[in-house]
Length: 596
Image (cartoon, rainbow, N blue to C red):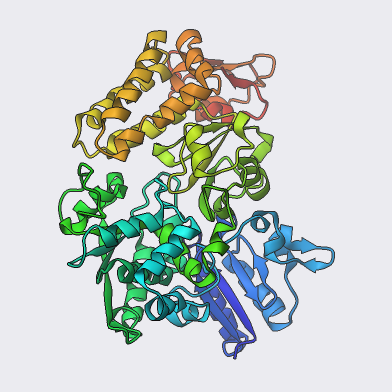
């Protein structure tokens, strides 16, 4: 028996920050102090507070050490793990009070969260099936196989109100029912969409890195429900940690008889295989994903027929994304009423968001549906850094839209976001402040969708390119008021004529920014100015001769030799040579350089 357990975050974020060095330093120091038999070191999945990584939590005290460096480890081991004295200077400051160390769940970041999909992330060793079983893992599968009929499972999901967390929000129970009832008997499939490709989104990856068995268990439940014996997890190859942990989890589940033949002695057979994607955003669309699993170029198919009738290999298929799967075992164990008691009337349960952009606490959060945007940004996210003002939040990635400050108090659910011209999407939430140009934001997401279009349909292949060219023209100060009308007309044409959701939703960032920030577009077109000072073609850097001390630092960092002047004399910028990189303004110690 160990007297202490040290949990080190092993998610992608903390791995990139050096968590492996922390693990190695810990093991070495524990051995040096003769503590290897008393203290266990466990690598977990993501704890959520990515801004504070590498993260290390010591139990049973639940002391939260943040931004840990290898050089901190000797002191933490000798003081905390050997002598029992918490090293407060390395502890997350919000948990330190006059009375002592308060629990992490009482901090602003965690206290408004309710973790269902993320319940095991940062808590268990994802590569140890026994730890998953120890938290109730595979109990739901056992309950389903021994006490419930397929119709019982479907009714439970329908009563829970669970909707797909991949973006569309289709009722999960209805999808399963269609796959079960449309075609009786024969080969059927269950598939998991782990192709998460939205810029700034990392919810599904983190669940797979921190709790891979929950997806395997839920897929087996689906297999029993619709009459399928084979499942596929489609995951992008750029997620090596998630892929490795899934491979380990599948191997362990097979060894324990939880995948394969005659599961729980009930005669039910079900197995799962991985399929790695090459990173095509369009393969997040369900029919393109299935086409890719089949070994073909990932392109969408016309619908109907829908996958529930003709999906993978033209057989009935249930496809859900990672977060949807992660909710299902808990719904089975706790009952549909428990899940339906959370959220809003039409959006039940919780939603995981990846907080990014101009926000203090970047990371993963799981909140009840109906939590306001203000609560997410200011309370959980810690607000906008550097005293800047909130301007907008982008939800749904390239498929979503921007929610302006005037709707800061909107409750987040499927219907409210659609009404505002955005969408839930898979759960990326990018926060923007007053320094962001909304025209440039629309251009950024358009550039992404242009690159990611599979090219199968003309409306998307050519339409998004023309749309990007128009927005690019505006950011360069070459647009006209007529171009704004063309923008809207083209947006609706692309939405109405594209084959799949990639093209149908690609204009959303443009439409939402035109709707809420049209004045910025007009400023670019009429005044030839970028109000946020972002679009380089419309910027000019100038030196105030009253403030310039002639220190020459600006001229030394200018990459194009655009700044001239002698020592202790005011300098001047040659606008014809200036490449508008901003290096001079960054280095000026006297605030003499401004952009406008």
